Image 1 (cartoon, one colour):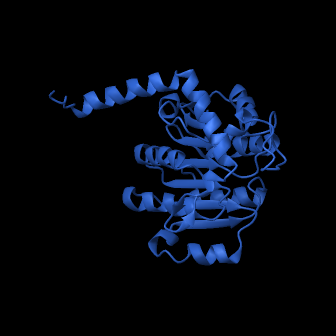
Image 2: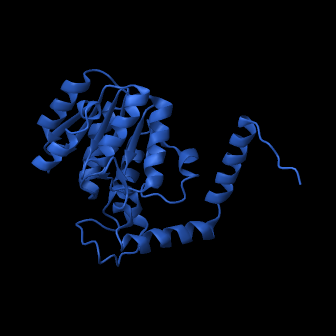
Amino acid sequence: MKKKLYTREEFEEFRQDAALRMVTDGELCKESLKLLNRADSYHWIHQTTWFGQPVLNLAQDMFAIQEIIFETRPKYVIEVGVAWGGSLLFYSTLMGALGGEKIIGIDTYIPEDLNRRLSAYGKLSERIVLINDSSVDKSTIQQVKGIIGNCREVMVILDSHHTHYHVLQELCIYSEFVGKGYYLVCSDTIIEYLPEEQIHRPRPWGHGNNPATALDFFLKQDDCFEVDSKLESKLLLSCHPGGYLKRHRD
């Protein structure tokens, strides 16, 4: 039987149709959530690296962020919660190919060895600016404004302290930096949908007190953002369900 050869437009239509059918397969979605929950007990999301540095996220989510950066070409990426720095290097690599100014990483804990490791990547390092302070502190916000000025070609990724109150503060503050057509990613909304008995991860957040609950409250107050359901429909495995937000109006 002769294999059908798609045009690029036909293949895109085929992909979108398949993604829509996949996301409406309730049983598959349940199984994917069970897989994520079980694999998390083995710290699956800690296994990805970029240029040798750990990226504490699913590769599927990192590829989704790559798609966003390719499509929107932000001049600045702000990541709140930098962990081991692999994601900062990932964004800097993309900007090296696509253009852009700076990657701003914010965290309350940035040890000296992280500074040394991130400074060892030549031009990739030069794009990265680290702010060692609370994401909601006034001095942090002033530093961010000092770097980006009035530019709103900005992408924000929130991935720090995951309590409802803290994430809501971040959403209210950092959404103001994001211009029309650009994205804000609220990470780890998956917490709301995982079983409560995740004893391997003792944290001050959980059901009813997490990024998903903060995001739900935020979106009820601010109608300038909408969830990119088309992007999310093709992920299946994601730590940020409902968390890929695009500003559709100022």
